[in-house]
Image 1 (cartoon, rainbow, N blue to C red):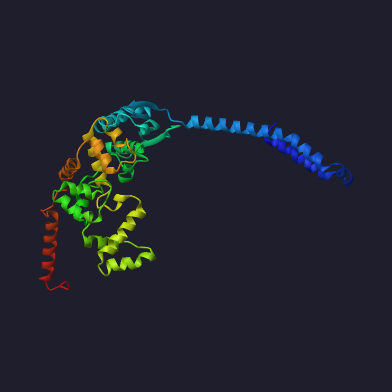
Image 2 (cartoon, rainbow, N blue to C red):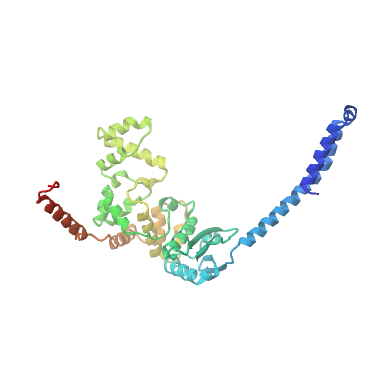
Length: 372
């Protein structure tokens, strides 16, 4: 009996009860009606279970009908699912990135075991079904350029960073890969209003270490190592503060009381909960240092990096790389200097354009016209 049939019986019984003469209705006690309803309840539950089973079978059939035929294969620790016509391209791209960049320091990864990667470059994208796994998708329509190594690198990094969950390193850097535009690190270093950044740019490698929020020793982050007094004052002036802190803010910004600035910055550090968050260099600069530490550490570096979740970022990096702070920060500075943006001393096209306009306006000014 279907769910609809059971409900029809219940409605019929109720309607029949209402249509009985008053004397007959009086004979139908409430207890009798409840017993009748209770006797029908198992039929309703059975009908509901049957309906759920039919719905599940229909959903499975529809999913199977719409599922794309796929080809699953492995590259190192990676499991990749692609459409058959894309397997050669997918295997080549993933293998090149994995073997040249990640395999040298990753020998095991719980997160990569839980993740699968999909790959598709087709005229019409079809759904690639992956059940029971986290998925990183590299899927592009054919009218777009073919997937590049940057996309593969990013997808592997997105999966791999899951291994750092619960570690202090995860709060310090958010990606495990070289930045796509390393020249931006040099620009951020050159434009950073920080004494540590300036010293780093001048070649003091340990100042680079400090500018990225890594304590020279222990786990202390002295603000005056990052910013000169006037730089700390300017930093306070950039933010809005709670009403309770307005007097300190005015003393810092208006009166130049640097001790008030330091109290406010210490309060901000405590509120952020990440000791190095006020450090001048973040983002790509830190990701590059993490990557260099892993590359220099070689085999076992990934295991050493995440061995102690309570280790400070500095301790974790030194353990992974097996280098001193000065050696590691020197390698980072050399990388940044090697990717310095090209200077544009020759004005080139801009100068030619300026000369053209200068000549045009000079000609108009020398004639008796309304432009004169």
